[in-house]
Amino acid sequence: MPHPTVRHERWNDIPKERVTDQITRRLFTGERMMIAHVYLDKGAVVPRHSHDNEQLTYIVEGALHFWIGDPDDGEVEERVVSAGEVMYIPSNVPHRAVALEDTFDLDVFSPPRQDWLDGTDSYFHDEG
Image (cartoon, rainbow, N blue to C red; front, side):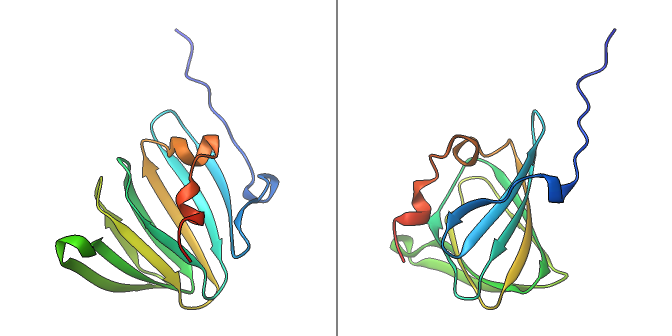
């Protein structure tokens, strides 16, 4: 029986995709998971959004200030995630973030973020 397709890449060979003027990323996907290198300039904003995908966010360099929850529900938790720290965001939990300094963030999603793969992640341009 044949093995599933095994892929091997160098991160630097994966082209950086420009998401906004202050955010770029590189993506690597499998069938049921995705890993992303996300580069955020100081002050970069990731607008509030939610997704069905589970998310692990590991800050390699820098720091992100997160707002977790829906302000319409009156329940928003603030957290700063700094270099060397990791955070889990469950499915469908609203969140937004601002880069407190130039930040290199490694995100893991399961399943892969289809909106990132097909370019329909328009929430990046919804608010400033």
